[in-house]
Length: 403
Image 1: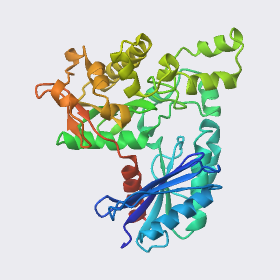
Image 2: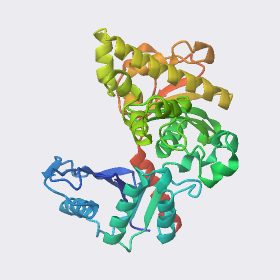
Image 3: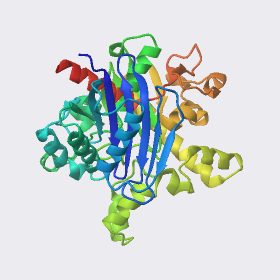
Image 4: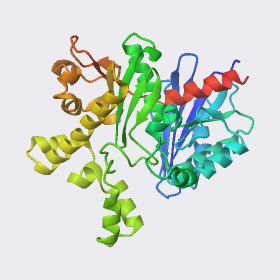
């Protein structure tokens, strides 16, 4: 097989993120983002990484995803990296929800598309946009292998005791209600990279992964396989997030409907878009929250404490699930950059072998690193996530097997 490039597409409802990688050395040849698709104020930002050139930006109406991908193809062609290149081996698509049917990356055909469509009720905000990107790319390159990489796939190894909710199984099965988990490509990449950082094989390492971005999730990974994760049927469950509440008593919903007179749509908006850090203090940017704390803002301080308290609960819970833990890995925007969050999350957990070294923890960088003392029983690591590389790697591995 001579073609070695993979184009990774992440299609949102009004955006299209992309990266072109050469899998001979996992290098990035180009990257970009089309945003506000369907509006008069659409914008395309393209960075030709292979040539080291400056980013190019273009403003103007981009009517739909078809027009967006054609614009991306034009930008790539300007760099000699067009979609018609014989060096392009495949296109890898991020798909948020694969249910229980898709447990690994899958070459896309009509049957796969139909199953992703059937999962729209459990991922109404994400799967339709992912399908739009798939259909657009297939129309442009119908001859090229296209692969779906699912956010949920890494979590399908959870035992039924972790994946099942304690409700009537007949009702649960009828409506596909169970814990699916999300951010799976990140958890897979980070757990494997953490093992590499420790100089050990993934199958010999137990890791608690904390993916802390605007969306946030935790996972317990035993020997390279997920055995529990914090997000559930949807990305709402689990940790406190930027705008999502995370865990709460389900009866809160009944109370808001019966006593508060709120509609289901209003409650949905409250819990997904007006809760979490934003709901607690009006900000969902951890940098701004820390600035406000330094100025004595009590609402910001309480929001931070609630955020950290939930983190501690999950670290403790997943420590119990795993039995023994080799590392706790922080990743994504907050996890990689907010030293106070890492310090606070493990403070008081010295009895579990967890601690951070203040000087190591304060260092910023884009490489995986240990921030715990050499004497710590459990490593605390900062491991920058790379979901695009994970999607490209899984896509290329599958295409290679099928050629």
